[in-house]
Length: 446
Image (cartoon, rainbow, N blue to C red; front, side):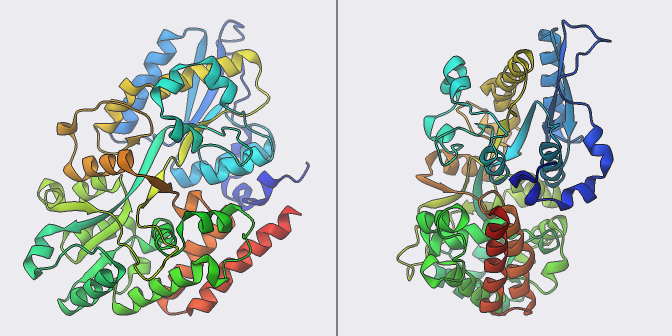
């Protein structure tokens, strides 16, 4: 088999999944015992069993199959991390699903190898997509040469959540600058709590890494590091990552996180936040539902969302940047026959329909990347604040797991930042690990 770029950035996936994953039926087989009137396609997504999202998706899928008797859609539903692994293996094996959700960093690899369709002609032939999505959100899915890799689906936006009860108790104000954040870190430690908590065991550092880069380096320089002409310059102070990790270490040394945070799962971090052991939590819009599970409605009512603080001593930083944007989209592989491609596009329309997505948004677990009206009374305050931030954001920057190439993202969130938290790495050592991963990646592309 030809060694392609798609195989190189997650070869370990084959070991993870085993040979059985490669045999999963896709490929547009005819359903119904050979009935040529019915085309069967496979959708791969993250609407796993359990919860309102799965229930709504299942209802939508059942209706689609009923309303389109010439199409039969199989759903291959996996957790996000498993989906990324499996789609990589199947792309490399030449047996991908006819339509799937994918994250932008992986779609970039597939588009580079010309393995996925350009959505521009699809959008031109199907004007519904242009009505449902703002041009800027479709353009966010563009590859560097202008091809549209995916149709945006789920939107993302960051949230720096804080417990208003704790802030009132100690007379604190929400941080507006880095100095405020550092000062609050020290005050929280003196009060016997920590300022922030995260799922260290689940390496939940990708969002914070991008927030720090947004405030120290800005978007243009981060673009150059993650996919431009400076991909081997993570150790160059002019590109901001050294400053970002220096700031991170300063916060960690001041007591930003509790002891043992690297062994704390996301659910344990949520519970610690709900118990008042930490005053703040930084991650994405979906956290509201997790917080409600951890602490109930009473806890949710105490929370507010704010933007990440500005770094006033970093002139290249941009305090208007929001981490998030259009990270996930629907992807169609090249090589489908006309009936398979038509079926995939028709399913994409059902999946992207604003009426369906209004219901998803009303669960408080997913922000729609398009334009839709939803009943704000059915969702929590902090979720609505996240939606408003997404709609009004002047600039988006992706979280690092959908921004940098996978090996570099892993070096940041699995090695560099945990190494700083544990004290194993100095800033220079942490940065060196990331730059090595970047250089190894570039060498593998030659």
